[in-house]
Length: 229
Image 1 (spheres, rainbow, N blue to C red):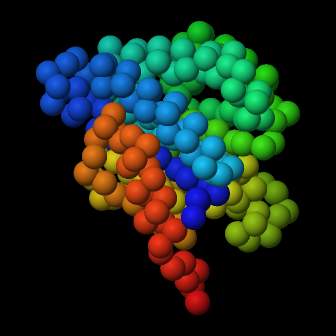
Image 2: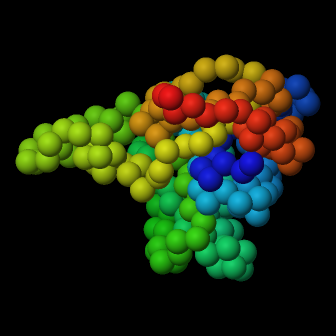
Image 3: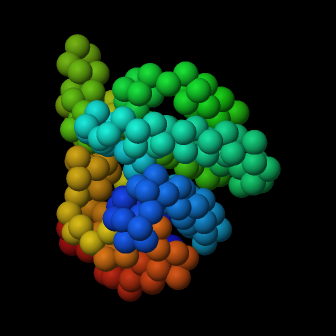
C-alpha cells in the first residue's frame, strides 16, 4: 500500500560525510541526489503528495554560514532543475517552497528560483511536491492564530487548517525520519501529522535508497490504522 501523502525528515547528511571523511557539504550534495531519486519513486508508486523538510528556521539561523550557503546553493540549483525538467510537466507536478527560509537567508537567486518554479507549476494538480525551508511547526500555528484573531470565523479544526501556511497540504499518511533519531523536531507539520504513521530508521539519509523506501512503504501497508476506533 502506497501512502497518498508521504513526508520525509531527511536526517544524517553531515554524519554521512564525516563517516566517509568528507566535508559536510558533500553530505548535503549526496542528500539532494537521494531527494530526486526518492521523490520520483514515491510519485511513480502512487503518492500524490511528497513533502521534504529541507531545513528548519533554527538550522538557517544557528548553523555555520558556510553550511547555510551550501544549502541555499543546492536548493536553488534543484529548483531550477525542477523548473526546467520535462518530467515536472509530464507528471503535472506542482512545486512549492514553504517557510521563512527565503526571508531568513536573503538570497536573491534563491528567491527568483522559488518564484519561477512556483509560477511555472501553479496550474498543475496531479502531483504536489512541497519543500519546507526555514519551516517550524510552531511558527505555522502562530501564523494561523494571527490569521484568525481578527476574523469572525468560529475556532474550529477546519478554520485552523485553512489558516496555516501549509493549508494546502492534506494530513500526512506516513512520516519517514532517517538518521536514527526517533523523535519529531520543530513541530514538523504538527497539524497534519496528528494521526500519521511514523517510520524511523538508523540509515543515514544519503544511504536511504529505493530499497529502503520500499521497506517503509511495505511496513506502512502492513499496519492497521484505527483512527480512534
